[in-house]
Image 1 (cartoon, rainbow, N blue to C red):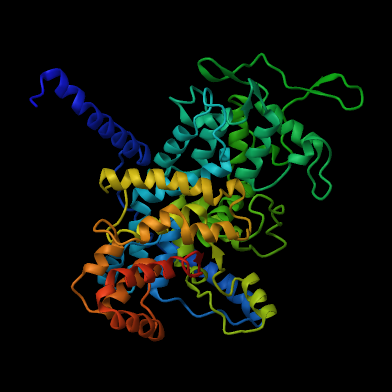
Image 2 (image 1 turned 90 degrees about the vertical axis):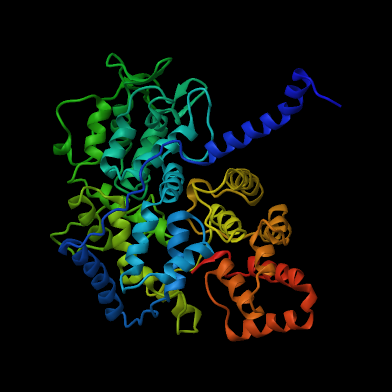
Length: 543
């Protein structure tokens, strides 16, 4: 039947809708800001190598004093997987493994770290990790809180390597509309039903940027620390003049911060004050600008130590001192030796609060490169070695890392911002569905958490696992099954794609027997092999 112009338009309408949806998904799953992925220069100055040596010596001294033998250095393929999970939230693709293996020189791991840091995937992944510390995971009230815009802005700052102290000041003192000035979502995240919870803002600020929990001091003096209720009230008073208006977050200098006296039940005005380092308060600026300057002041060692502890935790899966937001007060360096956080924090401050530089220092240190395997067999000794950072800690992958790794293993090519629209759309929807079923760790993701039976079953029999594990011309299972290579190479490729390593001789022999026994069932055996690797403990743990 011949279509007239009207009927032709109606027939094409569904295809136009599908194209529009795919375009929107692609836009949503990628960064809205196009910034050149210029790699950060690897610090070759003496200060960089000196800090790395100081970090190594700090641990070596502890091991020597406690008669602890550290684990061996991990092989490069394991370090490649560890790095990719830490910086991109996914395992490396076969394409990336081949590229890394082709690199020459003893410094190839350092150069690869630069490459990962320059990739937009790093900024997008770390923006989610840091956003959880700043605004949590809740969507909040959409009218005045836009977590998506906040995360996109944060990703832009990380990609541009904005100094971390400047980023913190922008969050604390930011003004404007939450869509046009996304940093102000740090403020609006504390609003509910038209009321701005200034106590929540104070607690978030101190936890995120000073690494200490003072929330209980809003009602009474802290029972285990030096924080007093008056300290909490004085800090909260710096948020006393902030308002959320129709045109955004603004300062109203006519406002006074008042609290209800617990004894008299009458309102009393609280004046802004900080509990220590009063000399670090500037004389000019709004109240929030003064607070921001005090929090990030070079003399405020809590800021640099908290930053170092959080970055260390994001790379290792566990912070150096746990919980990540409940650090003890800094020691007097004139009376005691600096610890790890002092060493990293000092370099952080002296080099412009450069997050990427700190990551490079940690990755270059011996601690990041240690194996998770101990020569000791006694549980008590293994626990002792772990507490002394004499081996790399075994940590369960975060839900985002699990789904990211499953998705990447379904493709031989790298899944990133340059992937086709179909793959990016699939990633966007798959992550949403998987996280809803798997469970989200929220802002407490750096705490130790147990795995669950439903999570294991989801990896085994979930819809996404079934789709990925079924041989298809569009996924790695089908493509590997059809490759014109030996079965030995087929097995090696499966292990590289899923576990970023070659199989052991015993593993290779086991699966080779299956291929040889049923040569006409190559696709089915490859599916079974992938299923086994997906559900191995090695796949869902960082080590």
